[in-house]
Image 1: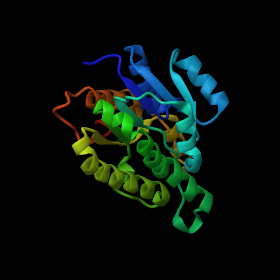
Image 2: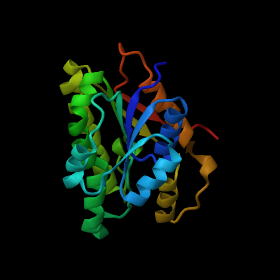
Image 3: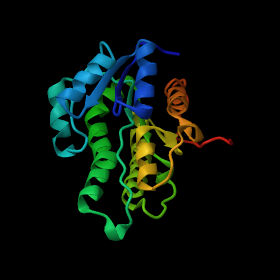
Length: 233
C-alpha cells in the first residue's frame, strides 16, 4: 500500500465520504476537501487536522471551476473521489424544477466540471477518478426519476472518461452502493414514510473499505465498476 498520497474528496462531512476521508487521514495521506461554505470549511478543518479545505459549492457548478482555480490545487492528485450527493424523491408529476436542477447539478454536472479541472493533476500522477454512484444508477424505480437520471448520467460520464483518459494513465471506477446507513438513507426513508433501521443496511465503513481497496490496487489493474449490496440478515 502506498502512503502519503494526495486525494481530493467531496462529501467528507458525513456518511461514506466521512468514512473514506477518515481512513485516508488516519493513514497519513494528504487531503484536499471541498466545502459548500466557510462555516462548513471550518468544521472540516477541525475534523481533519492538516487538510486543505476549498470552499466550492457543488450546487453551483457554474462557479466551481473559478473557485478551484483560486484554490491553487496540488500539481499532482493520486485520486479524485466524488462521494457527495443529494436526493429528493418525487413522482415526475409532482417533481419541482428546483429538485430536478439541484440533483443534476450536485450529482452529475459538478463531478464533470470538477474532474475536468483536475485532469492535469490526475494525469501527472496517473491517478484515479472514483465516482460513487448508486443502485439507482443501474435501475430506476418509481419516485426516483431525477436522482436516477443524474446517476445514469454519471455512469455514462465515467464510461466516456475511462475510454478517453486511458492513454494518459488515468483510471476511472464507478462504485454502485446499495442502501447504506447514512444520513442520506435516513432522509430517503423519511420520504418513503418508512421506519429507518441503520443495522439493516450496508455500513458506510464497508463501502469505504471497498473504495480504499480500489484506490490501493497496483497500477497494472483497474476496476471499472463494482457493486456493493446489503448482505443477508
